[in-house]
Image 1: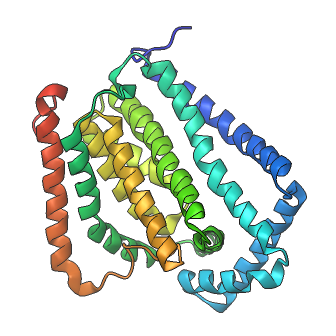
Image 2: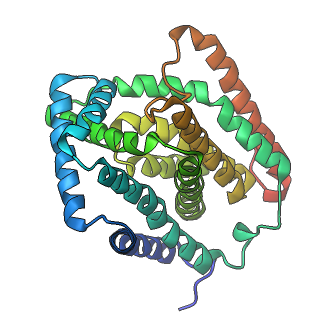
Length: 331
């Protein structure tokens, strides 16, 4: 069977789901084997560490109702439950490495199968001004996204048992993130930027914009609705309710950058820039939960309005620069 960008949406969607199902099963196993062969980390120890993390999470949540305080407390007492803290660091690195690669491999295979002869993977075509305005759009959106994050973090889910489960997961993930947020050298920082910043940006944009968003648009649905659906799925698969609307907002912004530019490199650069900025901030702050988006004072509403308006201007510039070439409809 010959695959191309003209293949039916059903074939594309089925192949995308098959590739990711296989990758999410096989890739973590293969990476775990590599970790076993190259480090002193055994799979039984990984299970034990996850069990201890569950205990620490439960204890932290019993002492603090605020997830951020629970995360800080959980990380502080973790050495009391796991004597060899080096192994915890290895488990966190296992997650850092396997997560983007599990997405990147099927995304690249899908891109090669359906877009190998299209403009999608054309690395020679550079749109300098589009990339510049894409980064500016992301940077100027941070105040608004930060305020959305504050609001999102205070939401209460109507079903108490689900609310508790989501809080526990949030705290557990936060404690694990703390383990690799406390980077001991610039070398570690560069590795985190590579995997969390760059590779994650490439993998998620090839998956959710170049593949999924395009598939939805090809069904002849309204492009704006297609962007919203892709952004919703992008946020939902992260399985973190207390960051859902933040990622939904980021997904919308990335979706429009790609839709207007028709250049996946624009959204990859923007996404990687954002992720890397958070990693660098975590390196200097020593706390992955602290970011340029957190703790924005309420009196910054006016500045948020101005920066959001500037973000809209940047998106309009991207649209204007690419309108004729990409035959975009009028806004």
